[in-house]
Length: 231
Image (cartoon, rainbow, N blue to C red):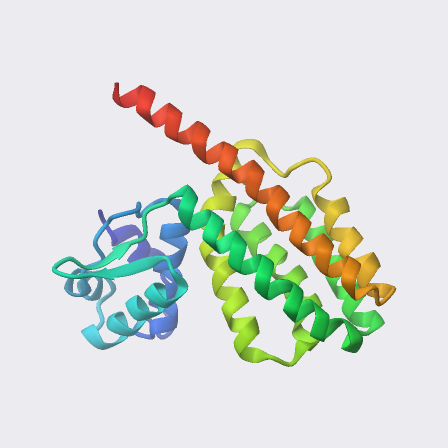
């Protein structure tokens, strides 16, 4: 594993802050540049970024909190391996937390909030960069959940989106968006506009598990391909 390209791409302004370091490492993990099981050694990361151990330690702790890395005895911090079980657990947690946020948010949403959501969705359907689409995708959902007035809940959901992007981005890059991607999201907005909380919540859950089926199929296909190459 080499971190030289990551360090070179890191903005020159305030290079020692944990925010910059965690953003660079997160992007590398999500893109697959740093693969599952790779060790993230504090001393190595600090040397590559030209910073002390302190901000690196905080950055690694944040990656662990997001589920992108794990702290293992005698191995330190390693990147979380990709697995269908992990993906399904993330999807399950999303299906529990997001409807809860939506139920509390919908009564407080305004016309401007709905227009913002629709605009973000439209942009997400047009961009070709998977990272940009992931940000717009989360921005769409966040715009519908933000009026729940539950910051801890929103933080948990945001972390789940960062974790699940490890699985979504390769699918988007390989096979693109699923048919009806935009339409299924728009149905949620339409239900929320009508203040139909039950329908909007159910649509969110349905969408999560429909996407899960597609991603799991892709994960199995990738695993079969890798086995074939190693045989």
